[in-house]
Amino acid sequence: MTFERRSFLKLLGAGAGVATAGLAGCATQAASIAAGKRKVVVIGGGYGGTIAAKYIRMMDSSIEVTLIERNDHFVSCPFSNLYLGGILPDLSPLTIKYDKLAANHGIKVVQADVTGIDAAARTVSTSKGVFHYERLVLSPGIDFRTNEIEGYNDKTAEMMPHSWKAGPQTVLLRKQLEAMKPGGTVVLSVPLGPFRCPPGPYERTSMIAMYLKQHKPGSKIVVLDANPNIVSKGPLFKAAWDKHYQGIIDYRPAKKVTAVDNARMEVLVEGIEAVHGDVINLIPPQKAAHIAHVAGVVGEDKKWCPVNQQTFESTVHKGIHVIGDASIAGAMPKSGYSANSEAKICAANVVAMMNGRDLAEISGINTCYSYVTADEAISVAAVYTLAEGKIVGVKGAGGVSPKDFSMAKTEAIYAHSWLKNILTEMST
Ligand SMILES: Cc1cc2nc3c(=O)[nH]c(=O)nc-3n(C[C@H](O)[C@H](O)[C@H](O)COP(=O)(O)OP(=O)(O)OC[C@H]3O[C@@H](n4cnc5c(N)ncnc54)[C@H](O)[C@@H]3O)c2cc1C
Image (cartoon, rainbow, N blue to C red; front, side, top):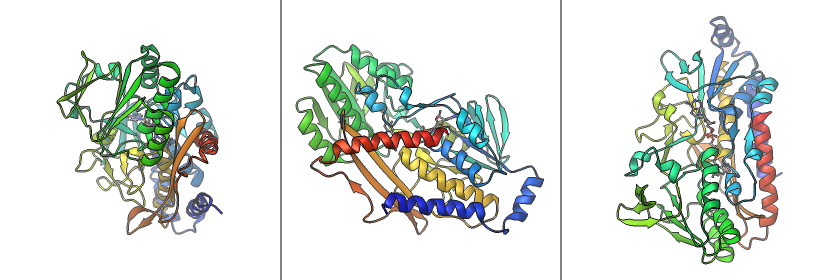
């Protein structure tokens, strides 16, 4: 049995245990129902929120679940780099709707912007009214620490798109690449970690380099990485770049962009070294999405949300659980697959807590595939467990792709399958 299957079965076992446990929690449940309190609100219909909402309903259908999301659809960041590389013609294969999820599981989906959270009153204020909850699950993703980049203003993201939330920003960057003259320079800036999707900037570098090689002769991409080296799968990316994109990728480590000049189309490294780009993909440093700050669940670093790493309940405010990119989930990276694992264990424990039952422990999985050419991908995989209250990697489980790229074409097929499976799980 593979590690993925073993871990998945363990997780299902934990969930099933919660759903079928004995009568211990009945008194708590009856009291909650009598008080009209058996309500969970989930904020964010992305990788974490859809799964948390669905699994809570699957584990205990007596709990009313309301999923609040500002958009009527969700566009996946995973595979959005392939659109930038010209492999996908549009974003439709990456877009999901919520109608089947709602109908199949009895989830109340509300399209609204959440504007406030009152942890003491256990209410959520939105553009469509106020919702009460017994427990709240937050999976709102990320926002940007643009205040750390001098000169960054309302116009910057239109001129130098981040494209780190898939949708209009991704389309904008592709249009800019298409409009660039041959012989031009693309600048891609990588912020200091932790950020959403550690291998993401390097997959994007590969995809843009591939596009330039095919469509814009004489062009290059300059990568200004604030980190001392490639954050994930470094040797594999470097080998792929040497093999396929020599003279096209100019990778510069330890180059932190601290300022921008919109008018000159320049970014400034450490405020002094100006780098001009015909197209600039400026990915700013990140933090938990704005609503997590409004809820007051971010930690002292003012960036991410500390949680009990077993239940994902905020260590700042009881009754609020934070999953996905916004949370500090021990060794788990900020990825869609992590958010999916976290959502399942969080759902199991929300149900357990609402029924006065024993808590489950995470058996988490993460695999991140990255395309390096149109039909070759590399991956990193890991399994996670709980040790002394912290999520840690399981030694010996997982690993990275073979160095000789012997599996790269097969892994590209696995990657497609991964995307199809996970988006189907989120939307049905
Ligand atoms: C280019 C790129 C490539 C990536 N590739 C991979 C990959 O191959 N594999 C992988 O596992 N991960 C990948 N990721 C990472 C993955 O996209 C994220 O880790 C994942 O989306 C996190 O899930 P989440 O639920 O925390 O946030 P999201 O999926 O971003 O969901 C958050 C949702 O909350 C909503 N929301 C936020 N605030 C509010 C509010 N106030 N009111 C209402 N709604 C709100 C948003 O509209 C959004 O729909 C990639 C990321 C990028 C940028």
